[in-house]
Amino acid sequence: MTKKSIESFIQQVNSGALDTNRHLVYREVKMRQKANLDMLRKALPRMPHQSLTSALSTLNDSGLIFQNDSGYYQPTAPNKYEYVSKMREQVRYEKWKKHGEENGWFKRQFEEDLDVPEGVVAIGLHDKWVGFDESGQLYLIR
Image 1 (cartoon, rainbow, N blue to C red):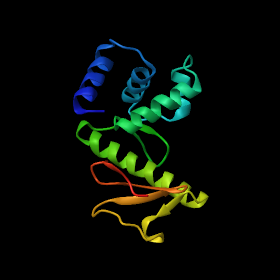
Image 2 (tube, rainbow, N blue to C red):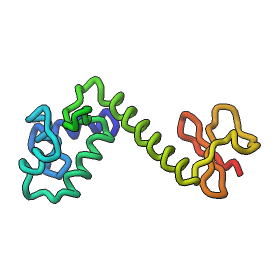
Image 3 (cartoon, rainbow, N blue to C red):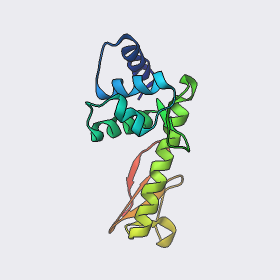
């Protein structure tokens, strides 16, 4: 989420203007300051489990909340939204990469002789090689 969309979302939560699942879950986490999945399920009994976990995941991805080591969800300080979002993205990437390496569909560029542009990370997906740079620009390597 952009800074503007986060500000808008927070304003909607505070005003009660919208009551989407994300708004309801965020409002509950913010009110409690610390809540686990069980607490949220009891506080929002009409919300299906999948909808609750989806809202938590989306809020976590956007950096509005984070999950601490004890499994509790907490609201993120406003000056940390971007940092938490980037950390979540990095953790998800590392899990995806590990899963790919374990299952053989993620190969590293140094395993094959590739002509990769400077600053580009190449990954093998099945029989194709793609790359990306820090800006997210994708490259078809082979």
